[in-house]
Picture (cartoon, rainbow, N blue to C red):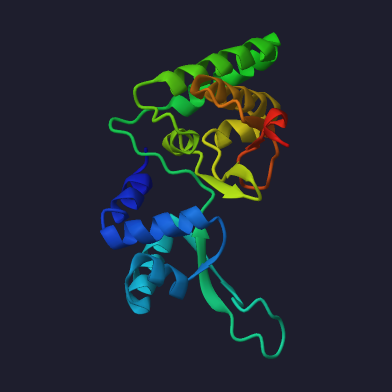
Amino acid sequence: MTSDDLESMSVLGDPVRRALYRFVAEQGRDVGRNEAAEAAGVQRTLAAHHLDKLVDAGLLEAGFRRLSGRAGPGGGRPAKVYRRVREERTVSLPPRDYRTLALVLAETVDLLGGEEKAEEAARRAGERLAASDSASGDLLEVLRARGYEPYEEDGRVRLRNCPFHVLADSHPLLVCSMNLALCEGLLAGLGETGVAATLDPRPEECCVAFKPSKNNVD
């Protein structure tokens, strides 16, 4: 943990800022001030103040875009928009460094050619998570609790956030295959027979998506 991480997290102590951050993060796209203000139930000027504070803290990034979707004359002036930053922030007291150990373990699996065993372990881990006392029995709630940020689109459940993105950047094949196996284990542990996990990567999102299984399609 760095002092910058701690200062960034302290900014979220304000309930309005916390609500604005959550709304922007959940959209997965550029969000204008008017939309954010309406979602948080505050005036636009107050929302703008808090959104810019979140930018200063490194939790959001800002840009300018025509919200009308039209270019050229008649498209209106570019408006200030916000989206969540890609960079991860971690706060731990006292400081811990699980990331380095995870990277070492991932490299060890690669060196030993243990991908198949790693997938088996990930699948069992998913089953244990589904059976844990903290699991609600609902797939979306379990995914939210694990940080995947699920959302529904075109009959599928997609995952806006990859909880393992640091490892996925350095060991994409290993981590994505383990992530898929873990999600398959979640489904098995929850008894979800009408849903299947599949690899369906999108930029800046998780590589796994959930779709109706073939047995559940008429």
